[in-house]
Amino acid sequence: MKQINKDLKKLFYCSLILTILFVIGIPMIPMFAGKITILMVLGIIFTAVGFYVMPIMWILYGGLRGLKRVVEAVLEENLYSNEEIATHLQISEREVHESIKKAINKKYLIGFKYDGKTLQLNENKKKEFVLHKKQCKNCGGKLEKVGDSWVCPYCGVEFSIEEIK
Image (cartoon, rainbow, N blue to C red; front, top):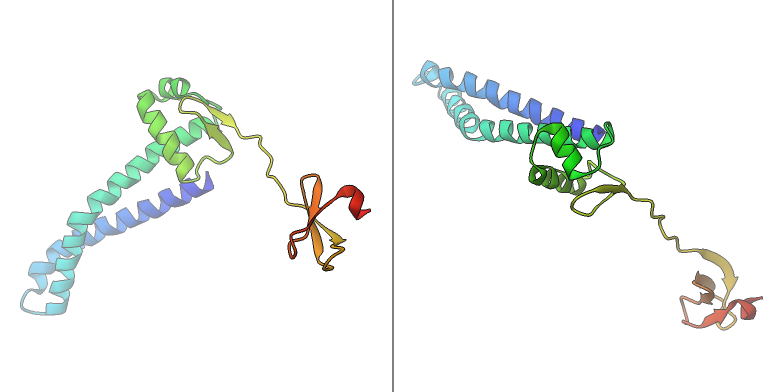
């Protein structure tokens, strides 16, 4: 939840600043026309950027607010199926499906498996590569345990457990 809240805050402040610049830029154009050219140009830039970028930023902000609501339904309300979330939030299952995919891709939902209809906790353990301090009889390199045998990374010779002892 921290990451989505951080992204929401960034989008909000960016949208708010662009809105303020747009409002300030409009009167700057006629006020400084023919007087202070650089401030008039700055007003034109503020107005243009505000006019074209500000609405996009507010749309992105609104979309992320909706995505946050789906993430909250999963993490705080323990709803794990598209049907449950859609019923609870009064949105379509297709929207829930797209929101969950986006939340997983953006790492707002971590530790879940998603099969397209339900979320399940990912209980898989990370496989570890074990490094032991056994030495190769041929070259003296440190052997690495791979499965039930020991392999020398330098000369490629494979040893069984009995050969190492």
